[in-house]
Length: 214
Length: 396
Image 1: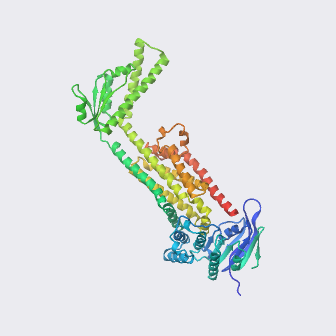
Image 2: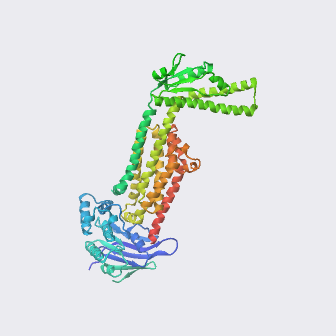
Image 3: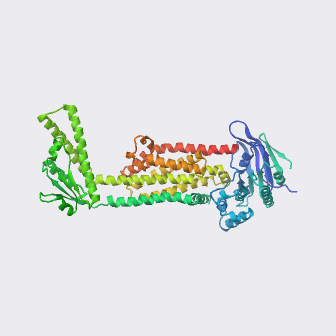
């Protein structure tokens, strides 16, 4: 079988919080097209920092980040927090993120309609996010990252606060996205279920990355 | 596109909070209408008064009283200064349309010479309140100058010569009263009554313009920036950074705050016809940016939109109060005045005064030097708090 194309390559990445011990100490890894890469590690191991470096929003102290040109403007992220405006409605939040990614007109309307349906929030779309339950907010949080069809989707602990049913629904959605060609990086504490959907697992320990087995 | 998305979002956040948010937006608008209605009344009462007639009865019939009559006739606010004959009554003159009948009492200038009474009799026309008020204001000013001079000269004479008697006393009194009269006459010539009159109207105009402009300058940046901490705390800025929208987020806040502030300020300045308003344009940019930086820092320190709004509202009220935007600065208690210089409203008032006094853009900017000095400090604080916060988030 032909090896899949590498779309993001990190080489010898070092990152520090402040002066002192580096949080990432020579991390090298490659993300392949259409795979789900799991990242695991203890609290403070540098998982979120590594995700930030992958996204291009944190500059490493040293090392290189090589990105495939097709990722340009096609990277989206689901942060650990509910990165939505509580005072806006679900629909308004999706409109905002769609416009940020340059989706407009009919395409925007269709996309938002489909996302609200997929997240089972059709009848709640015009309600303010602050009135949503925790699970509903999590689903909308993911939907906001899918207002475009991303080439690379970065997820930081997306299942926190979700019930078992919603988690299964999320994993099913992630598999679909992978099958459509989206590369996914998933940070999760859930060592069982989460790892089951990952094609590869990278463990961060003492600033180093070790590729684990499934 | 990103900027437009952020602008749309900021406007939605500003107006989309239900009746409460709507009320917040309507409050300054209601205030604006109230002030404009007041100003409209004020300008119609004071600024566009046609010249009017007064009558003067000169019972003193002295050389100085003749000089005073001549000077009064030069005041442009008085269309005619009628010298009353013995058989003409006050009522007749008021019925003929005189705003006031002023009587220079017999021996007035002798009493002035003798350092005793300085009272001038005056009958005002109740049917011409605005004109009568102007005459009263002018006569009070003249008498006030005479009384002040008299007190000053009496004290000076006592210190210099002790208790004088006879011819020496007459000589000294004569010299001093001559000086006092000259002082009044010179002031009448160079600072005519109509200029005193206009100063009062202008002073009220500046006070209200400063109050309402300060309100807008402080209120809208607060309302727009209150969500800043929340956007960082919820990871919205992280997500925006991935979508390359970080700059648009901040730029949008700056633009929306500016538009929401500049438009009503421009309307107020235009409607009250503030003199030399164009010299205030650079000052407006500076004051707006200072306010923006201040609330940027406040939002990051308060760490929640609700707390930012609450503390911000209290601070705005204090700044308006201490800055002389609610009560004129001269009426503020001495204990509050040192705090005034910490208020943006204080500099708004000073800047507008400098403009209407014709000091030009350079003169206005000179007043704002303390504000300009504070901006880099606020910018540094904003950068540290915004950047420092990011570092904390990464650590977590």
